[in-house]
Amino acid sequence: MASPQIIIVGSGIMGACFAYAAAERGCQPLIISGDAPDHGRTATATSWAWINASSASDHTYFRLRYQSLQRWQVWMQRLDGLQYSAQASYCWDLSPVEIKTTASKLTNFGYPCSILNAASLINHLPYLRDIPVAALHLPIEGAVEPASTAKLLLEASGAKIVSAHCHSLLASADKVTGVMTDQGEYSADEVILATGNGTSRILDTIGVDFPMASTHGLLVRSKPIPSMLSGLVTAPKYHVRQQPDGRLIIGGTFGAYDPAKGTGHLARDAEAQLNLIREAFDAPAPLELDSFTLGYRPIPEGGMPKIGRVMQNSGKLLTGLYLAVMHSGFSNGAGVADAAMDELLDGEASALLSPFWAN
Image (cartoon, rainbow, N blue to C red; front, side, top):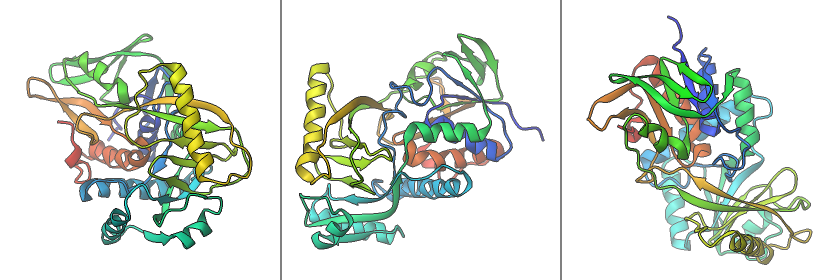
């Protein structure tokens, strides 16, 4: 049986995961994207790129994230250069009671997890000055470098990439048949939308409403310093990890950041975010601001991933179109793409993905 002609719209981390998962099954998708993964306005380029399952809100979502983390581990064994740049999470952005509850829940789920007291934590984080009473230690979690990881997956997939802006979907009756771009029309048996915050606009071209609840996130990078962190830290007011080039990449809380005050305020907020690390750590060199980015997290309305076939406003299911919109694409991407490609090619519903179906 011939492989279906597949178009993937988007070359960020979700598009890259789908491209690699398709290639593993012998498919050669066509990728259409207006921006490269390292373009500063993409969610991929402005991501902290934490791969974890510990922050999942319930067991159903935990299963998806844990399976994705395990799929990342498989891919890392298969692909030279695909690896964590920071490994093991240390989390104390919870109260001591919540830390115990979370550790118990994760242990019951079969997830490697322990609680470190202050004396044990300092052995893992020797530069930490502001030491909490207790912290979660999650040894199988990690982070990757976002743009280079997406590029590596795209290259490994062997997919052809067309640099074009997707203006609209093309549909006939209840089936999507391709896309219209500024480079012309492209036809396919299946169109996979891995377009993040651009999804609502594209679906609107065929009369489908898709509400989003995206939020901004401010990330700050320091100038390079000697090695200080090998893992990821999430504290009540900040999260931080160190990149291979020595730069610290720092976020505030994981809640929404309000950028409405303007660039001048962004610069002051970035410096304040860096100052939290100056106060919390005895860094091996003075911390200086290098740059900051304002990302836009692609979050569907309701907060959970939206995956799979799309229902028209009339109530009819659209064939030929598959959706994958979520935050975080890094935590979820490998597992979602792997299960989704099985669902697309075999025609059988995925029990892992069905709780998150878009229709």
